[in-house]
Length: 243
Image (cartoon, rainbow, N blue to C red; front, top):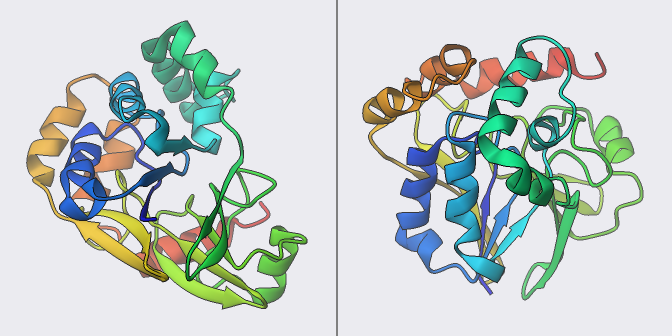
């Protein structure tokens, strides 16, 4: 079984289209949509596109999906969540609100794999590639699974914490990796590959600006122009852990 792990799309429809068209993703038996899909410029379109793949897709709740589907918090994020929720409409919102926190698969050569947005018990904790092992172990709780695939911090990594291999698939729609290429992961044949798919990010920025998403400039311009490095993003997220 080949599993494509697509995380943190954030309504970036051009990036999602590019990854789904990538032959490596197109050949996947399962698409694990790891959360934060529908808060962004094209929430309904991204959801409709993935739902069109039917049972091949396993949807997982992310913190931004929850904000868009439930009563959002105050401030800029709340405004953006309300904007996204309105464009989703009641029927889509109802489907999003039922997404689980985790999806689990048994994969040959990898064993039991748990997919979650941040941790298996919450969509909010921050785990980076430099988070101390003790803190990671506490956040993972009693997880004894061989592999945990997460997202949330928009930077790819692959590290081992005790008995658990913790893999961050990166971000399809808003990567903090020094380029705008969409990042994702492929689990196949007992291996995990951290991948990137290049696409026309200049054209994407023009397209993403059109709907009037409230956080377009703050979220997408620097990211898709490659002006945020993995090191900068990791340090920023680490400074916010537990805040």
